[in-house]
Image (cartoon, rainbow over all chains, first blue to last red; front, side, top):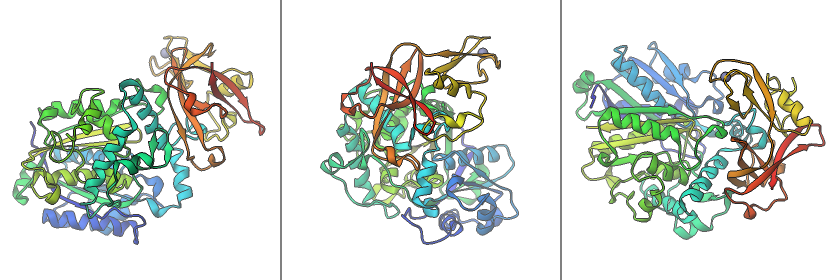
Length: 384
Length: 136
Ligand SMILES: [Zn+2]
């Protein structure tokens, strides 16, 4: 199990609807928290990786602007974009920069101010997150693609709308505790089941909300981490994969192949298996996404995901706690910031500093972050 | 030019596979097949990712398909608002998968995974051309 690169600082802004500031100020909120957490200065930082889905930005080439505002000039900076999985892809790049010996300390800053553009413009972009030649002309949209995976899971395994609703009920029960979450109300099973339709079989509470937010993860080489950090959290394994954007190229609608491949790679690199994971953050932009993650990550056999949630095994007290920070369903999903927020939760868990949501004795944690509807998959495993 | 006529709203004008639209005009939904290595493609491609060739033949789909998955959406991206609600469907046809919409008159509660469907070419009043699915 490699222990070459560690996380030495994490930070996150509150995820909110309509952030009352500019993107540079939003980014700084996460950066300040992560730098104070790492107890380093900008002189210690070798490079920055800025992560954002630029179709939401009015600022062209935001990495330069953000790095300037963070005080990370003249160090190299560049942008990494993989839509919803941008910041875990940024972490993969930062890991490589450190492992290659180019830099000792790298800042990964993810942000998205989704309210920067009008909701009309946002709807317009949503239609182009698919194959624009052969899918977008039919008026396809993100929830429709996840809905078609829900239909696929239902048809193959007998999964029900209630199984998905149970995932939202769990998420909301933890969202109540998360001061940085955009949705902080409890959701009952009845509320989730009676909510209006979005894309059948998905209903309003099966979907996460857009939000504005920023996250920051600071990575360091093992030697540097030992020098500057009392509680480094090591990256033990990383996996990444892709799948056809046009869903007609997919083999199955009951799971995401990119997630399965990324998980396999991350487990092999870390030398651990699903049974070794103490706490996980998975990409639950929709309830069905969390259900498919249970199976892709091996927490449940294919088709057995519903049993995990029915038996409350993914609650904090269960066999494999998942998204005990409320997940994207409660926190909101500021595209470029999402993966970094997931990593922050796991780092706090492994430091035993997660407060009310602490999983006792958590030693190995996992992050699963998906870009688009399974176009890009990143899985990262962390340990103390 | 030519590809901008595909769908009620197209996002692409120039494409080497714009013959796709010519086939729709003739009332046929077509895919491409590599003459060198026999790999078949839908969506149609001008280039073969399998053998790197570009000698493609056009073949019209024949017969019925079956539903792989579907969703009935209440919301639509900008430019499609007037169409909502509508049903998006993935169909297996001649060993390939095709994404499209169900005919608007077909109630979504009559659909199921595995159900046989047929393809129909639709010529829109503004000169655009597309296809949709109907129960077979
Ligand atoms: Zn070929």
